[in-house]
Length: 358
Ligand SMILES: *Cc1c(COP(=O)(O)O)cnc(C)c1O
Image (cartoon, rainbow, N blue to C red; front, side):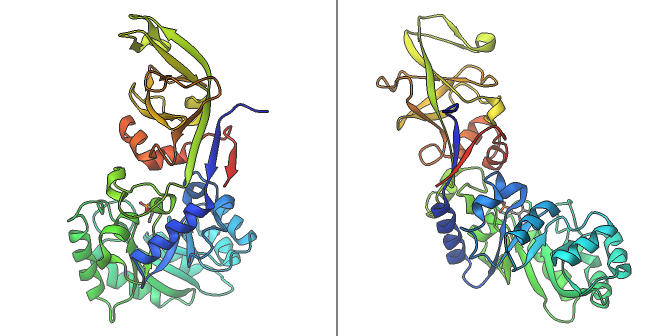
């Protein structure tokens, strides 16, 4: 008794994808990245299926606290570190591992009163120019941090900007080797995101940090790139046809008449729009499936509805199930058609869409 749109999360697929990750990096421990509410899937819905992880990586304190309150006792890593010196009391209370990427954080750690030392990830900027110390600063920064009473175990961390390319980690790996060479002994390292987990085993080291592949979506934006890995899509977004129109040649469809019928054919009106998180900039031709038959969107996506071509699916009727993405329609393919990546689609599913756990 509700609007027919629904998002589903497959626990079996999540568990399976975590097993695939472990097979890909058998010697490494796994931080399952669950930032942004588990890439839009819901941390509470993913927690049990991912409980074989060695730790969870995220960035909101609220999400870290939620995991602790769910009973998670293994490590939690704050990927963006702490935001204010005063936040260290919270990190201490909830025993959160933090990245340290800026000079002010070293001062804050030195001055904090903690109940026990915090484990830290020393974040190095190996070329992406987002967060982190420069590689030539590493020995000095490392030694200063190592001398602090408030610092426990230390791990060397970097993040790759182009790990989906075959030569995309060469330069950062070389820079990180130089940085590590300035330390007395080789420290524990954590470098690999999803793309490096799949395609650059030399970067696995002690810990990996996969995110998107746990959810069965490609880190390159191209579904073909993960087609042979056995990864399964975790999220499905489905709705139904709630209306049908018969078009005659020349008629327009939707706001701005962005599609005009060239011939006589039927279209289906689907209860899903941009207020549900479906991208408004999806062009005509974006793939969808109706009762298992592939077809395409037509015209502009409106706030609450979108139109699809029923020419390839003559049996479609009011109530036919429409897959926006999921098992049959890879989120990567929808994203590619819209000029974005699967990550953005998953994270954008709107609060008004009900979720069901499978
Ligand atoms: C998001 C993120 C990851 C995971 O990236 P994926 O491409 O989803 O595997 C790993 N490390 C950091 C620092 C991140 O911000």
